[in-house]
Length: 240
Ligand SMILES: Nc1ncnc2c1ncn2[C@@H]1O[C@H](COP(=O)(O)OP(=O)(O)OP(=O)(O)O)[C@@H](O)[C@H]1O
Ligand SMILES: Nc1ccn([C@H]2C[C@H](O)[C@@H](COP(=O)(O)O)O2)c(=O)n1
Ligand SMILES: [Mg+2]
Image 1: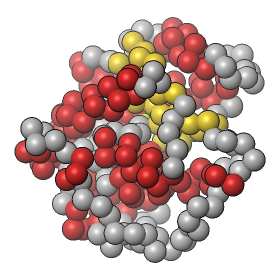
Image 2: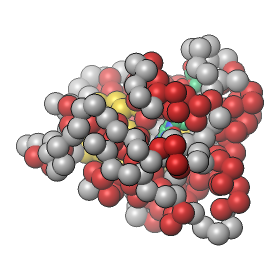
Image 3: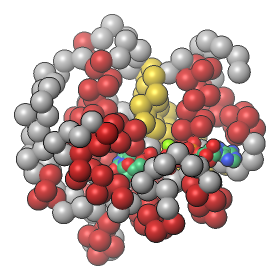
Image 4: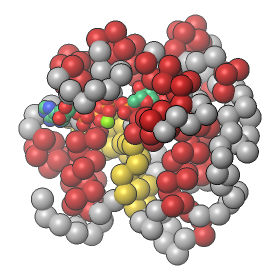
């Protein structure tokens, strides 16, 4: 059984609390989040032969995270874990909390960290790969702190795809993948959440010297040329 979901309050600054109270979901509905397949504590990642190499991929909605992750997977052989995809999979398989996740995503808000981190942890434990690309995570300081607490690790590097809002909106509206959150109303809310919560995460990793900021406008291949130096120490498995 999953533990009770922690409150957001310790991680929210007083100046941000009023806007955030509108952005984050009511915690009560998540308090008894459970899963049918419990994960043994402290198993998996830490017991693998290779120490995990973790890359976080940040950027607003439509900034091109998923597109660039596909190139990183092809070139450097990472395991791609998209937090949004993992949450959408819970919705698709009608898991007990799928409908609450769906409502949260439709509203453009962020699912409580404990839920997302445990989905990520399960995938990391199941993977034979030790190089992970964690896409769309952390979305907030609360996400970041939960990851450190539950997984007990920090990212080796952090990519931040920096894209103007206008371009992000255009891309999302043209995406055509049938996502419930790819409509103008939800995009506006997602952008608000992004603006409110992303910067402290970026600043945290910039201070640690782990941040690679990438200008995410231009041709996909040109953007990938900015990505390559971040992986200079990684073996190239296929030239793309
Ligand atoms: N450099 C680019 N120029 C133009 N369009 C792009 C570029 N990169 C990606 N796209 C397109 O923009 C859309 C959004 O890209 P993508 O899904 O990779 O973004 P994302 O950051 O993963 O978004 P989200 O956070 O919503 O999942 C897709 O339709 C993709 O094909
Ligand atoms: N760390 C995360 C990542 C994603 N979500 C939810 C909220 C997002 O709007 C949605 C889609 O994510 P994307 O595919 O755009 O990365 O999923 C979240 O709550 N927490
Ligand atoms: Mg994506």
